[in-house]
Length: 192
Image (cartoon, rainbow, N blue to C red; front, side):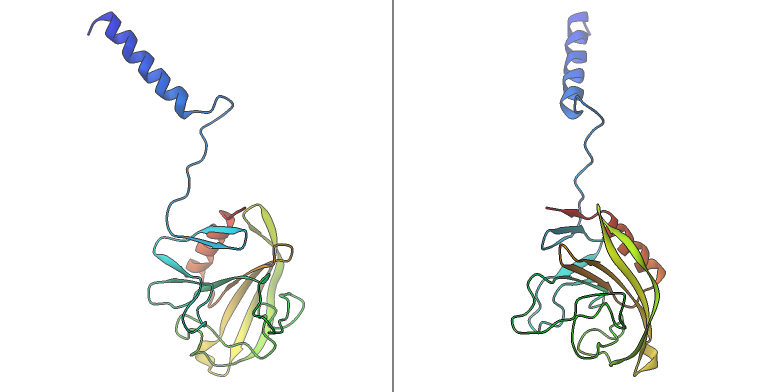
């Protein structure tokens, strides 16, 4: 290779490097890849293999995030647009079943008992509360121990509530593996 070709090759490499690095700092983070869900102003990158059902034909799986055969591991709901004429309870860690926005008794949704097949909840005990991140925002957070008519469906439910954005996230049938996925997914959330 001649000196001229060497200089030209170095110039091309330097030019390419200059185009990929901003002048004022490190490279910009890569855009998340994978399945995504957008609810109101919230944008989530879902765990690999997960899906989001914005609207289902029967309405039972609206806003559900699921993996594999599980119909609804978590629900993400925009409460800016509640069903017309349907009264709701705003989410709160200050009341039993605080994650549930209905005015009747909630059902015990778990991986084995999806919406529509779950029995009624009979009790709810707040185990943990405070604030937890959803991207750059702090959400009201709670974890409840829920007892059910069918004791095989007893479980724990986690809730994140953003009152200004009016976005509710509920995780059903909490367990460590899915807890870690939820925390990572919500920690990486963005807003528009």
